[in-house]
Structure formats: structure tokens, C-alpha cells
Length: 197
View 1: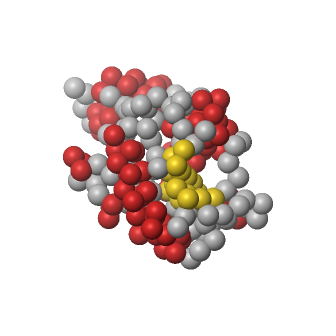
View 2 (view 1 turned 60 degrees about the vertical axis):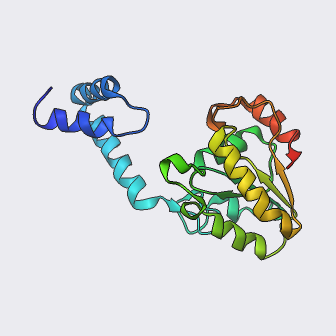
């Protein structure tokens, strides 16, 4: 609809997840009318995140050093490992204050319709971590939707023969929902009432 730089910006913003054409247009015009210092801060933050942020070499959470702050924390238990789909799920669980173990971020969930299988996730890395010993319980905290349930079932079948207790977050989370949208109380209760699978 527009020409040149403004249309390029609208197109790029429209490629972001959750940003539709109208939102992309609103954001683009906000940027156009914003103070140049604000725009430079935004551009700087985007550059900085690409330069500094990487994935933790241990759990694959986001980090600005080789290991994330949770993996560096000596007060965390190595005996309980919580598997989540994305780094945003780590934040959701941490907000509850209920979990004091370690994490493993898969980088997604099994979704055959999208062509995502176990080989596209960090399942191999999880199995290596579990094979090193020390983990007594594996909590499967994938999203309570079809893909998350398929991922949890697959991981449960893979891990059970290793003699590690495998649990799943309890009900209380809405089916078809995402962990990042659950409130702290609901997620905390689900954590307390997790069940074996």
C-alpha cells in the first residue's frame, strides 16, 4: 500500500509472530512519529540482543554468557530436571517460586504437521544429560496442547527405562493453552500437583 521504507518496515514487522498487518502498520507509524532517540534505543536493543544473547550450553535457556544464571546457581538441585518447550516457559515457571531444580529447553514441541519431529528438538542433548546420572526426577512441563502432550508422551517413553521418575504438571492448566499465559497461582498449583505418567 505504501512505498519505500515505510512499506519495507510494515512488511518486516508483519513477519514477527503475533503481529498482523494492521498491528504492523500501527507500529510502523508509531516508529515514524517517535522521537529519534527512542527509535535509536530500540534499534540498539535489537542489535545488542543479536550480538550478546545466545543459548546456555547446558540447558539451552537464553544467556549472555556460556551458561545461564540458573545453571550457574549452586543453590539449585541437580536431582530434578524440568523440561520445557521454550525459554519463555522457564520465566513462567520461575515466577511461581515453586521450582528449585534445573531446566532443559527443547526448542519447541513435536508437531508432525509442521514437520517437527524429535530430531528437530534438543531431545538428544536431554538424553545425554540424563545419561550422566544424578537426575532422580524429570518433570515434563510442555504446553497442555496436542503438540505438548505428544512431546511429553514421547519423552516419557524414552526416559522410563532409565529408572528416572517421570512426572507431568497436574491439571489446572487449560487444555490448548500456553504456559506463558498461565497466572502464577494456577501454574504453581499445577506444579505442586504434578503426576506420574
